[in-house]
Image (cartoon, rainbow, N blue to C red; front, side, top):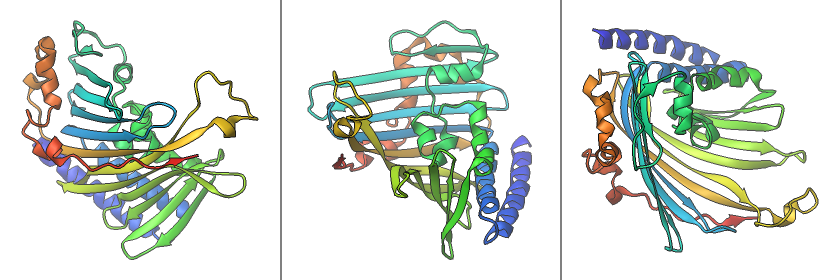
Length: 336
């Protein structure tokens, strides 16, 4: 019954949001962008329980430091209704030189006001009382899947805290400039820019209201744009909720030689920029369905190796995220 009620509420909310967005199309760009962002926030707010496995592949070309290829798998079981949360991550980073491989393993379970976690795959801490759930998420840098739309915030620094979702509400209002770009039958391009000249451009699907592409940029004083990152999004519908199944992008990073004092005078001479490629794929196991209580049992961490199998696509019967389906990623050229 709860699931049916949630679906009815979602349906009515979506219809209202869809109608508001459609009525804003072609009118004030700020109002139109607010409508699109509000629609995406409404989608995520409607996801009260979910179980998803995410694969992320990153390729960083060699610059001053060695380049590497990194593959990670993350399992999220979140139930906002009962305040139960499970997170498991395993991954490996291999230098392109082949000389070294680093592995990562960490996990967390929160239930009944207590938390059990580990930050390296050796031993899990005993359960302790939760004083601040957001701090527990932040201590393991659990990425906020809701913020993938904001390019930099979804994976580059955004962790899963309650306040971050307000970015959907505040961004268009806080922006110094909001502009409409290309408008086609099925998509519209909208740009916002803040006072610090940093901004985003999104290409929204006019039917689903979801972004197809996002760009994070800086408008320089000479009027040119420096692009920090771009992402392309793909969604699939689940009970009327569009869920991301693929986020593919590239990001501008920079590096300075070790042992050199960087000043305003020599920063351009020593700064080395390069593109980092990132490919994320999602396997949604369940959405807005009750998750059995035993799936949040602290005893699951008694064996860390078994616990980390929750983030193993082979062990979980999800071959679409296995190495056989590994994306072909080519290192981007350096950009000085």
